[in-house]
Image 1 (cartoon, rainbow, N blue to C red):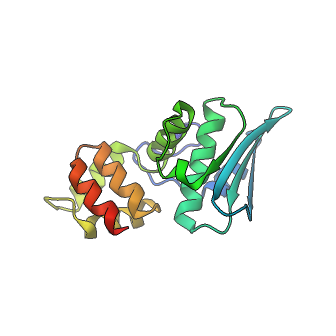
Image 2: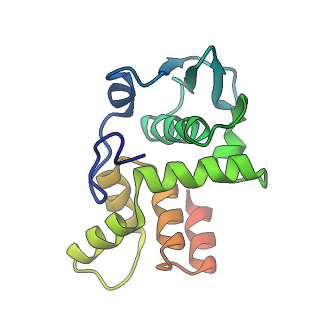
Length: 166
């Protein structure tokens, strides 16, 4: 997906609304108020995909939600309404797990995270590094924490300790 959108493998993903709005990709982005507890939604009609994002969420949350909904589009999933809990990883639905994994890798590629971390000349992942990584990749600190966990740089107990502080 990054190659299709001409984003370097280790590069920073730009403004996703603008990115998806360019050209004829068959994707429409709708940022609008959604009911409380709803992060976003995906549907497709007559070959046109619609990605809905709750405008009342933080910018980092909107960015992850949009990438998640793009994941539904990319993988050809059926229409879905995504509550906040799904984007927080509180699901076992394979389609939602796949969309979350897509969003995480699209926004914070494992290799890019490791290269960026190496350039910081740090020996351990601490809260300061999580915040700096989140800022660099324009995601939430929670997403940065999960990406470090996925990359094997945080142990489950460390993730649990950091999550308690979010």
